[in-house]
Length: 127
Image (cartoon, rainbow, N blue to C red; front, side, top):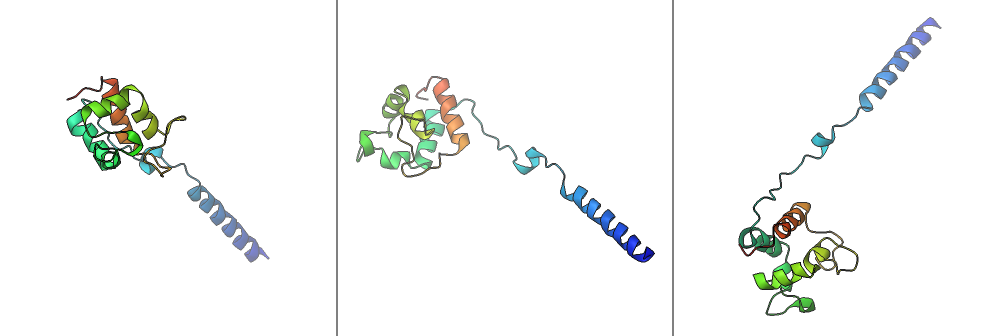
Protein backbone atom coordinates (compact mmCIF):
# COMPACT_ATOMS: atom_id res chain seq x y z
CA UNK A 1 0.00 0.00 0.00
CA UNK A 2 2.82 2.40 0.91
CA UNK A 3 4.47 1.64 -2.43
CA UNK A 4 1.28 2.72 -4.25
CA UNK A 5 1.14 5.97 -2.23
CA UNK A 6 4.73 6.75 -3.22
CA UNK A 7 3.88 6.04 -6.88
CA UNK A 8 0.81 8.25 -6.63
CA UNK A 9 2.78 11.10 -5.04
CA UNK A 10 5.50 10.78 -7.67
CA UNK A 11 2.93 10.81 -10.45
CA UNK A 12 1.17 13.81 -8.87
CA UNK A 13 4.44 15.76 -8.54
CA UNK A 14 5.31 14.86 -12.14
CA UNK A 15 1.95 16.12 -13.40
CA UNK A 16 2.33 19.36 -11.44
CA UNK A 17 5.78 19.87 -12.98
CA UNK A 18 4.36 19.30 -16.46
CA UNK A 19 1.60 21.79 -15.73
CA UNK A 20 4.10 24.47 -14.78
CA UNK A 21 6.33 23.75 -17.75
CA UNK A 22 3.38 23.80 -20.15
CA UNK A 23 1.79 26.97 -18.78
CA UNK A 24 4.24 29.78 -19.28
CA UNK A 25 3.68 33.14 -20.88
CA UNK A 26 5.19 33.60 -24.30
CA UNK A 27 6.95 36.84 -25.03
CA UNK A 28 5.00 38.54 -27.82
CA UNK A 29 8.14 40.09 -29.34
CA UNK A 30 9.68 36.63 -29.73
CA UNK A 31 6.53 35.13 -31.23
CA UNK A 32 5.77 38.03 -33.55
CA UNK A 33 8.96 39.95 -34.25
CA UNK A 34 8.53 43.49 -35.48
CA UNK A 35 9.54 43.93 -39.08
CA UNK A 36 11.48 47.09 -39.71
CA UNK A 37 9.40 49.23 -41.99
CA UNK A 38 11.01 52.45 -43.12
CA UNK A 39 8.40 55.18 -43.49
CA UNK A 40 10.75 58.15 -43.52
CA UNK A 41 11.50 60.14 -46.65
CA UNK A 42 9.10 58.23 -48.88
CA UNK A 43 9.58 58.92 -52.56
CA UNK A 44 7.03 58.60 -55.34
CA UNK A 45 9.57 57.34 -57.88
CA UNK A 46 11.28 54.87 -55.58
CA UNK A 47 8.72 53.76 -53.02
CA UNK A 48 5.19 54.44 -54.27
CA UNK A 49 5.76 53.16 -57.80
CA UNK A 50 7.38 50.02 -56.35
CA UNK A 51 4.40 49.41 -54.04
CA UNK A 52 1.90 49.95 -56.87
CA UNK A 53 3.88 47.70 -59.21
CA UNK A 54 4.53 44.90 -56.70
CA UNK A 55 0.86 44.74 -55.77
CA UNK A 56 -0.32 44.64 -59.40
CA UNK A 57 -2.09 48.00 -59.13
CA UNK A 58 -0.50 49.42 -62.26
CA UNK A 59 -1.06 46.25 -64.30
CA UNK A 60 -4.83 46.70 -63.90
CA UNK A 61 -5.01 50.50 -63.67
CA UNK A 62 -3.01 51.85 -66.58
CA UNK A 63 -3.57 54.10 -69.60
CA UNK A 64 -3.86 51.13 -71.96
CA UNK A 65 -6.75 49.41 -70.21
CA UNK A 66 -7.81 51.28 -67.05
CA UNK A 67 -9.99 48.95 -64.97
CA UNK A 68 -12.85 50.91 -63.42
CA UNK A 69 -11.63 53.98 -65.34
CA UNK A 70 -8.87 54.38 -62.74
CA UNK A 71 -5.33 54.99 -63.90
CA UNK A 72 -2.29 54.73 -61.66
CA UNK A 73 0.64 54.62 -64.05
CA UNK A 74 1.64 58.29 -63.82
CA UNK A 75 2.18 60.61 -60.88
CA UNK A 76 -0.72 62.83 -62.03
CA UNK A 77 -3.08 59.83 -62.07
CA UNK A 78 -1.96 58.64 -58.64
CA UNK A 79 -2.27 62.15 -57.22
CA UNK A 80 -5.89 62.39 -58.40
CA UNK A 81 -6.70 59.17 -56.54
CA UNK A 82 -4.80 60.33 -53.47
CA UNK A 83 -6.64 63.65 -53.39
CA UNK A 84 -10.09 62.07 -53.76
CA UNK A 85 -9.26 59.43 -51.11
CA UNK A 86 -9.77 56.47 -53.43
CA UNK A 87 -6.23 55.12 -53.23
CA UNK A 88 -6.03 54.75 -49.45
CA UNK A 89 -9.73 53.93 -49.10
CA UNK A 90 -9.42 51.03 -51.53
CA UNK A 91 -6.15 49.54 -50.29
CA UNK A 92 -7.23 49.93 -46.63
CA UNK A 93 -10.55 48.22 -47.45
CA UNK A 94 -12.46 51.16 -45.95
CA UNK A 95 -16.25 51.12 -46.00
CA UNK A 96 -17.60 52.84 -49.12
CA UNK A 97 -14.58 51.99 -51.28
CA UNK A 98 -14.04 49.07 -53.62
CA UNK A 99 -11.53 46.78 -51.93
CA UNK A 100 -8.24 46.41 -53.73
CA UNK A 101 -6.66 44.20 -54.82
CA UNK A 102 -9.95 43.21 -56.39
CA UNK A 103 -11.26 39.78 -55.50
CA UNK A 104 -9.01 39.52 -52.47
CA UNK A 105 -10.07 39.75 -48.85
CA UNK A 106 -6.45 40.37 -47.93
CA UNK A 107 -5.03 43.88 -47.99
CA UNK A 108 -1.57 44.68 -49.23
CA UNK A 109 1.00 44.21 -46.46
CA UNK A 110 0.97 46.59 -43.52
CA UNK A 111 4.41 48.03 -44.28
CA UNK A 112 3.28 49.06 -47.76
CA UNK A 113 0.14 50.64 -46.31
CA UNK A 114 2.22 52.52 -43.73
CA UNK A 115 4.61 53.73 -46.44
CA UNK A 116 1.77 54.97 -48.65
CA UNK A 117 0.20 56.77 -45.70
CA UNK A 118 3.54 58.35 -44.79
CA UNK A 119 4.08 59.55 -48.37
CA UNK A 120 0.59 61.04 -48.45
CA UNK A 121 1.02 62.64 -45.00
CA UNK A 122 4.23 64.25 -46.27
CA UNK A 123 2.30 65.91 -49.10
CA UNK A 124 2.27 63.15 -51.76
CA UNK A 125 5.15 64.82 -53.57
CA UNK A 126 6.36 63.96 -57.06
CA UNK A 127 9.85 63.08 -55.89
